[in-house]
Length: 356
Image 1 (cartoon, helix red, strand yellow):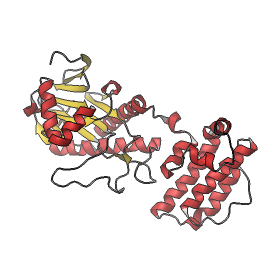
Image 2 (image 1 turned 120 degrees about the vertical axis):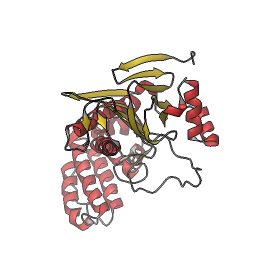
Image 3 (image 1 turned 30 degrees about the vertical axis):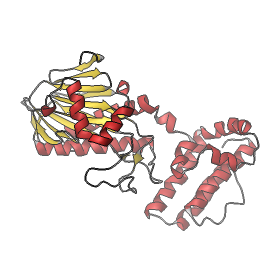
Image 4 (image 1 turned 45 degrees about the horizontal axis):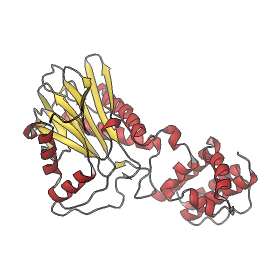
């Protein structure tokens, strides 16, 4: 245990947070109740002593594959000198050096969220086609996880923790929606990753008894705002994901499996270097991004059945004419036609050498 790097990164009367090697350990200092997605001691639990968020190494994945996640958590807690009978934890491939902590307060109420996040490899919208089938605890999930530990310095019952977990989850999804993080399994915006984890903790020693953690309540507001702030920071620290990072043509088009090489192959240019320098300007031009984003929003409405393609075809042509007027924008009979037309229109604009 003494061989591990250790650094205290947050402290309060309710809990302390320590960075220990490749784990973040939350030491709980008061009587508490917890709702957690942990494999070990998961579900509803009272009087936990610690919660860990563990970054997995290549060797760890092998151990988990052969022995299971619960066995790994017991092993890891023993290595860290923690009591596994009163502890729980989350697993991730994200680096603990990229952990983000946000505290929000109002009068006597305080909420802290501790987040690690990576959503660029495993983003998924609830309802997308599954990436694995589990039978008798045998499955092989992908990596890329948003783990959230939210600690509420107030006294909630079990139902209040469930409501808090709903608010927490919706706050997470709102960040991914705001950043337009793509699902890796469909053309839609992700609502999370396939391996997200959470732990919500309340302080049973607190004299402040609360029952409502929904979005209308001040507690719900603090939960959501702390989760959102910490998640924005964690995504940036882990993958540089931010509003600026997402404000490009390619960031919008990638969820439709369109990348730089697809633009180049249909451009008619022979030099990729020459093309790249011109594409760079179009890719980051906010006016062009706004047109592409508007069209893809219409495509989303077509894909979910809110509108028919015939309803939006004229609007799409009108918007593309803002990028590069042409007489070739006819016959949009499928979403693939729309995507192809965006590519060809942007390439025509690159050939003209002008931005809108």
